[in-house]
Length: 205
Image (cartoon, rainbow, N blue to C red; front, top):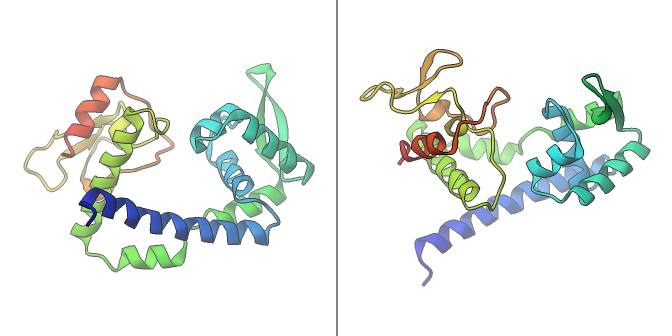
């Protein structure tokens, strides 16, 4: 009999299979590979989308991203634009056709959303806490790049309101936040120093 670690890994693998299946289906509809569809979504999401930033966000190599971007440019879905602050640098931008595909492929599978909706509020909070800690552990081991989570942010104040329903605090919006308020991907996240990130992650223990 396998231990709980292996059971959890097997459970997560099933979720990955669902996400891959849905992602591939959407990509095939648009005539793209799953990687190309993911890159379109990142070009739309990132403030300064470039090959390096996209490679880091998707944990891919720069050559892989560069090759996929070249294909997307040929398909008329992405264009290369000179940055205003540095004429030597190039950022990526979606064409209208690319934006339409990116927006349609950025939706989560209905089956997953329905399944999560069937859980209680406390169960969803516990899942979010556990996944945040897991992602943080993988980041610190170097398995994945640093993500834009609340616990990695300089604005996050862990346990600022002890004993309250929302014990943490976001200095950016100046408001208390609880487990279900934690973000896994926040566009306004500003990376905190490593010791502060570690303290924030430990506060979820």
